[in-house]
Amino acid sequence: MTTDNPHWIKSSHSANGGQCVEIAANLAAHGTVPVRDSKDPHGPTLAFDTTAWTAFVAGIKAGDFTA
Image (cartoon, rainbow, N blue to C red; front, side, top):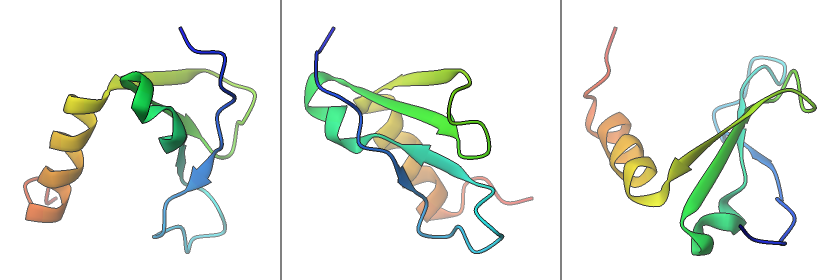
């Protein structure tokens, strides 16, 4: 595990009053991308492998998760 502190950033699409997810992309160099709910910054954090996170973001951009 790393001793680096996460630097949380909100999604660039957070136009709904801040109710969105935040990621700590600065930890990707350590092989993980932490994700949390911006409404509950002291709540649980999910940690995704950078490969899985990259594939997820690529799928979103490709429109693979349309409702």
